[in-house]
Amino acid sequence: MQPEKAPLHLKTTQLFLTWLFSALVMQVGLANESETNARPEIVDLIIGEKNIDVVVDLHQAFRWEHTRYESLDTFPQPWPGSPAMPYQIWFKEKGILEWLQTDMVFLGNYTTLKTHEMEASIFGYLLPIAGKYDPVTHRLTFDDLAYRPLFQVPDLIVEESSDLNHWSEATLSTPQPLEYEWPQDLSLEIQKKNGNRFYRLTLRAQ
Image (cartoon, rainbow, N blue to C red; front, side):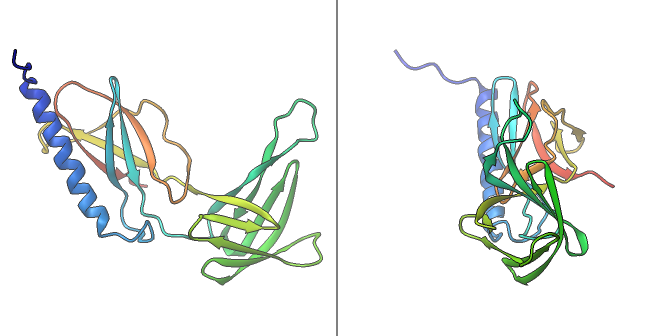
């Protein structure tokens, strides 16, 4: 008995998704490990029963400014019953730094020494604190603690089309996150519709 052939529409969908993913991978291969500040692009589509995970590479380069760092270790809060929380560092504009330690915020200034090295002067501390970011492990060492970088997510729009001529905004199944761990890919979940669909990514106009 010969195996039953797959319906034509399933073959078409599989063929299109394979072609789409191959084309996107070829484009990403020309970039340099998320250090390009190129436009965000779709690098994968994970098809589920009701939703589609749109995997996005934001292509954001390393930076200090406008970045939040969160310690890998967590620390107990002074209030009974409160969950343990990580320390957090905000690198803001004009060299301003905020450092949250449980329930206390320390203010200071930071200067960049090299591309991946900085030094912070914290009010209340006698000596400056050196910070070094490891581009291999993607971890910042600051005051003997390891921190992970969190970048803000730009306002993205996933658009869909059935004919490549008429495009409409796809419906997100879950809200777009405010941050993502750099330089990892970002996943956006959209509602799956019947029929073949083409997808593209744009930035919402400010």
